[in-house]
Length: 112
Length: 114
Image (cartoon, rainbow over all chains, first blue to last red):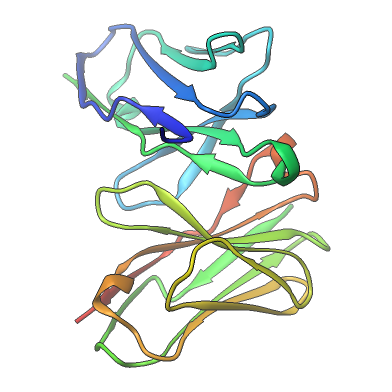
């Protein structure tokens, strides 16, 4: 089983739509969770951390379900500029807590 | 504020040639440093990480090596490149507790081995 698994997509949605991505992780000892955004042929950039209580940043909402070991990202009112690959990121846990493991990403294409 | 620099942006190298990619961080001291590779259509693979000068941990056996000669300098090298070394190489830095704050990536080097 992969350490971090994501649906690769693509998710093709119209502008203004709400879209949600899920991600599952295998190590129950993981304690830190993030969503990164990667534009085509660019470096990944931190979008938001994911906290146990869930957190929101504008149109973006992240949630964590420790019992089921999955993380979600909800994007409301999608913009054309949201088109990118979204990477789910989890720390390795155990004795290697400082290492982050990146999922392969979910591709979002927002259509006009 | 902290910045991370990586160069060159693109590189085309013949099979069997050497490689040296450099990464430097400004505006912080004693960062954790990381080298990742992203093959075409694939996820990010951690190659090396370093928590201090001269301290290198290798994550996967490969044709590459890393060195950290100065606190804020991280170098990725190869003596003889293979076709399979092609990919997008990303350097990243974090604070000591990188898992709390996430990593910040440089702009990457796109390497094509021909």
